[in-house]
Amino acid sequence: MAPDGEADQAIAPDGGSGRRSGRDVLDAIVRLVRRGRPPRAPAIEHVRRPSIGDFEVYRRRSIPLVIGGLSDDWPARSSWSLARLRERFGDRRISVIATQNGCLCTDVKTGVAFEAMRFGDYIDVLERGERPEYYLVEPGFGWIPELGEDVRIPEYCRNAPWRNTRFWLSAAGTSAPLHRDLAENLFFQVVGRKRFYLYPPAFSPWLYSNPLRSALANYSRFDPENPDYDRFPLTRNVEPIEVILEPGDTLYLPSRWWHHTRSLELSASFNFWWADGALAWVVRAAEFIKRKRHLEIYGLESRLGWPGAATQQRAS
Ligand SMILES: O=C(O)CCC(=O)C(=O)O
Image 1 (cartoon, rainbow, N blue to C red):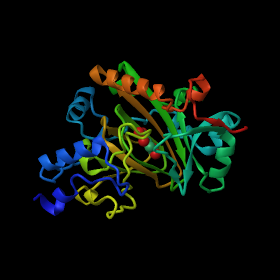
Image 2 (image 1 turned 180 degrees about the horizontal axis):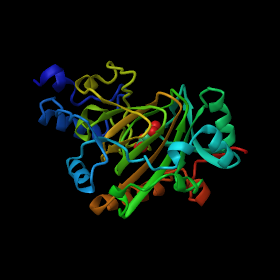
Image 3 (image 1 turned 90 degrees about the horizontal axis):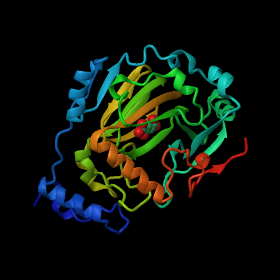
Image 4 (image 1 turned 30 degrees about the vertical axis):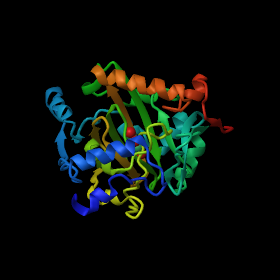
């Protein structure tokens, strides 16, 4: 008998749905092998501008890191005020994802649906100090290519064969649910503070992942901010690592680390995902499968006319 009644719960972690996916069964086997105990979570270090060699040491260990000073020379640090963004891009269209009570809307059958709206309309709501019913999640160099002039590609991933970016702008209180990405991530906090709850990939068997065949296979059903231990009892065994990013901080988020975010203030961020070696092929394969299943990946599908784009274009 494993601790905390683990053996009893091991094969029924369905979060109350009554159904069990192949992934649930695999997770149960891992928990049994580990006798119900997740490994210890690493401590998160704060460092200033590590050399490429030093950064590679953290990367090989797959441990997140908060890095200071990386965006000191970015024009974004001084120019991403709401007034300035409106002046430059107010009439442009940007891509957004609907939120409910501040939390990004997701659907296990259809995934994440991007919509388009006028940037100026989004800024209007932020300037009134209100929370829009949307999270601005913009493919960084896609819809507003000029954003690329405000940031600098970090030297740690400059030569990666696969790279992608996003610009994130949100009101205080906006949140993204617990999920993980295949690619490596350097997440730059530019304006305001943002909180991350992190869990290592090795905690996955305790985190109630959605089934692999769902449209949200990389999302958890568990909400670390409002833990429902009756539905998700295994999560009692895993504590999130809390990281609060200040403006000017960069979070290195290794491949497959779970993260849940909450903007603590009006927040603007920019991130670079990248992959090299075998990981680049895995990321490309995952993108290929998502496209085949007509799931949106980066919010550009509608504009590029990819089949199955779920975007409903809102009139500007
Ligand atoms: O900033 C956020 O709210 C979400 C960030 C995120 O999920 C990511 O960078 O992968």
